[in-house]
Length: 481
Image (tube, rainbow, N blue to C red; front, side, top):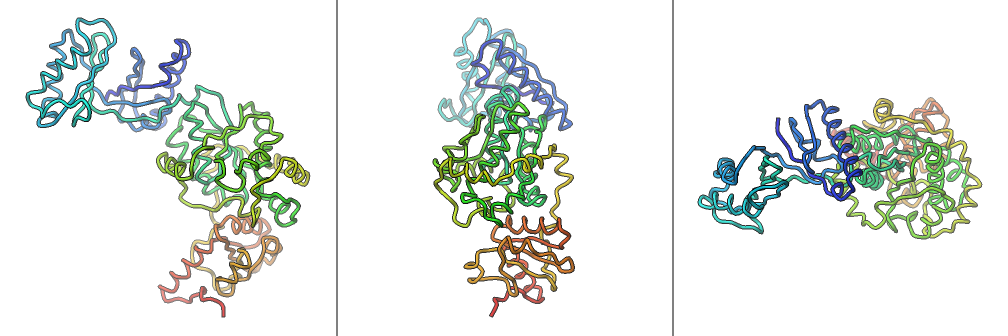
């Protein structure tokens, strides 16, 4: 077992009552994380420090509210000479031939100052070292003194910072299987707010696969002790209304308003404090200033956008660092709803579109799960895993201009509406599009109607054809004559 000294930042700025509340939440979260992972640990507060004795430090890297921590050794002492002797025993070999510095923090009444400790320990080790360097030494020696206890350490490991999860109110986060929304959810969690999740499925249950993958990684690393409630809405009917029947003019923006209205209804019923989204100003067509205003018009609960001022590169960097960068990409919803996305709309434009939307149907489709439930029900059987069956009918959902430029031999170019009319249960259909979202949607609908359909991407089917060619088998990717 190793002793760790854990530090927080903002908690220390709170009043006594609030600080104690947050310290207790942080200790509870630390204990819960270790317990869930099956590791032994004990923790307690000691004069503004949290002491954790544990088998390892893995949880401390990921618990919100921890600014930094250090593996430390604790000693009882009486005099300054005792501290010098302890330091020599611990660090004489470590500083040999290296530069070093000493920093002391002290709580309590002693017959010496913190500067006395720094000078005394420095003098005791100076003879074997390469000298003192207080700007960038090879070794920093830290001495934290609390009463008659001295904690020595030479390593400081950063935690995520922020506030303990559960110290602030709950929010409902709109999360997809993409890059931005999991980062936004993480950012709100870092500020102490537990976030339950709303996922709007456009190709149910196919798009649950990337969603569950990303959310699982977010939860297992950052909050295994506080798993969220997950609301899943089957939004496939919207595609028929908005794309096949063409009843809406501003589909990429209207779809976002629909999600907001759905989230608003859940927030009001369940008592959340607001909605969290992963929108960043101007990043995509639905996130222009005008469109964000149109989307949020008529929404009567707070909408938080933690990423609003971030560049995409910044968000990607955070996603990689926190472990939520997606391993697969099925594309954005706008690839379904508009070939020429609207970049400027007015609230009244979206209000008019909303007259064609049956919100009751969408609200009634919502089901509640926890992440373990979803792991057990995800279905990736719709995705084409092997080679294309020789008797398969191949459907290309890309725009006609892209189809004419290059396509799989013997494939048929169709719109989504045309593909949804397929009803022959005696054939196998392989459907592809650019990113996979459109083909996954069509395959999921056809499967519900008993049609044997698989989805893939254009790159995916090209890659499989190349593999077949390498194996010496027939190539179905030869351009049509």
